[in-house]
Length: 621
Image (cartoon, rainbow, N blue to C red; front, side, top):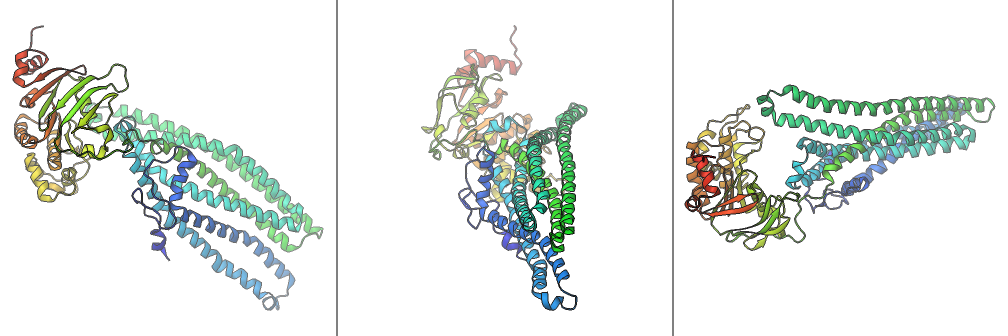
């Protein structure tokens, strides 16, 4: 069987701008799919249109061959009635041989071709293609996109969209051909013998169409509701598992049970509402089929007893009616599945067919960093609120200068860094890096030029080696080990071993690095940034999770890391940034003080009060 031939027709992970399908496919778009249902389907179908066209014609061939079986039964009965047994083979061998060839070779070959197209060509690769492209679009969304939804629900939508879209198309192709071929063949053949013989089937088709017209839209709506409830439940479960340490620390297992139970009951209620229609549809369809079979049989016998049709016509009519009844159940089941999958696709579009929340502007160019100068010019930002977090802020960081940002929580320090990283865009003003407005550069190049160590360090659930090498994937093992040593992480790395027996740099760290202590995670993050070696460095509470002894070691290495780089550092522990070239004090989104540690202490302002509080000399109210 030519399995590999069909399995290689589609590249499931083709890059944007290239062709996923080898035959007549359109290039993979780099834009998200359209937000209309038809446009969403067409976006993916056209990328493998030759396969879907082949499926269309293979389905036609199978439907025609299946429809020929009742005709062959009627023909066989007619031959048995026309020839005596001793002359049957001699007189009718061409007809018998032709029917045998169709049953033995034609129909199996057509079904095999249809299965190869479906199972080898479409089911695996096209499904993976949709998942890959959906992920490609979602992972490039801006940070607010992920902050406003459950990560579990987004992942569920990405995973479910591919199978649902694939099944919809395959089932539609098959259902359409069976309805058209069987309906046309039955009405044509039986009406050619006697128009009254086709009457029960004609009435059945009208009632069947009315049944689908009434129930199918309701099935679609209830399926979409069930799919939304399924995604919500998945999001709640993943949220509980991701934050399992918090659940354990606060002894909130029962509260999480209630949180998940509510979602599960919502899904169950939506599913039961959907199943009511399925059961009702099955009952009405079985009643309709029984009436059609009875009426067709009665009409055939009535006409035969009057001598108006032959026995071969009766032998054709009854199997044809029986086959239509069977096919109608299959078609109804497929129509139900089609609209259930439509609901899943519509729900998935909420995360996939979404315009980029922070796209690169048209004509964006790569950022070129030669010196590392940073300028904030009259920047205002407030997350869409009238009272902004940053108010008309001006700040220049000279090339190679080390600047510490100081201020109470909510003063705007992290917001300033997030704007520099392009996670948000200023509502007014601009930010320049070496004279280039970052609003006009590609975000990938902007973040490639900035090394960041954050307060809440989350590692990937991969090996220590892979986490450090994330800073520079092409780095060799010697460079990885050197970065770990500079971050004072090599000592504990050698003692690590995961539950599968992988040790040292091969040990996996668990989801978000949960198997490491806060200080260990921070040191791995610092090693990652050391390996990246970007010209601009951002330290956002980079040593907050370290004890004093380890922090002293890291500070020496950070001093080496900061040499020759432009540095912006945030720290609530003022001793960690006291040695910076300049300290900038923020209060309510404005710069209220600037200077060295000694200068600011002499002024006796906001910084001096913060310093005295942390050093134990609290002011008397």
